[in-house]
Length: 180
Ligand code: GDP
Image (cartoon, rainbow, N blue to C red; front, side, top):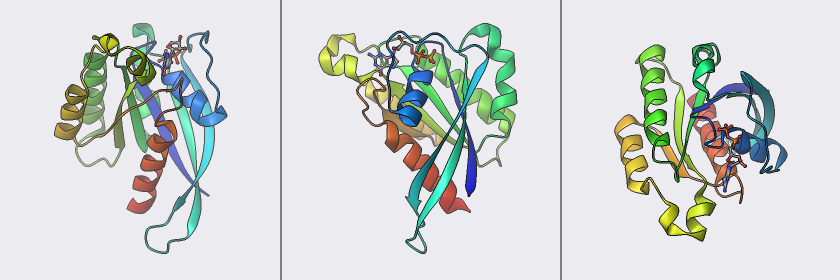
């Protein structure tokens, strides 16, 4: 089976672990403890081979990194050999997009121009905005424009309400698989 390495990056508390837990276990835990260092999970999905139209299985090996500053030096160990990176921010937290931008810039700088790492920029906690639009701290356009300028996939999602989570991984899987 084809395997892809995937890393999650972003400030702490933006919902990286919640996104992975939703994708791998279809669960959400409001009281989840912070990740220490990094956590490893895997999940297999099915997708379509764009040439043969056959259904194929691909496995993601997922490294969920801790967002705290003190673990920052560990991150290169996880993203160096990654086929894909999901960089997460919290649309209700004004500072979290600039942290995400820093991660994207670090990835581009360290991985070099000719790498084919697929990068997705993800604004999480969409459910909070759907409840109360005044909680939005980062406009959709702000995230989207940065993503377009930098050639990233972009989505606003909710790990809590399971909005758009599976689609993130499906899109990455199809993109990576059909590159091969
Ligand atoms: P991480 O530090 O980036 O891994 O973030 P966590 O996954 O630990 O989530 C941090 C906090 O945000 C936890 O209290 C989660 O329950 C909460 N959270 C995560 N995703 C969502 C979401 O989609 N909606 C809401 N309302 N809360 C979320």
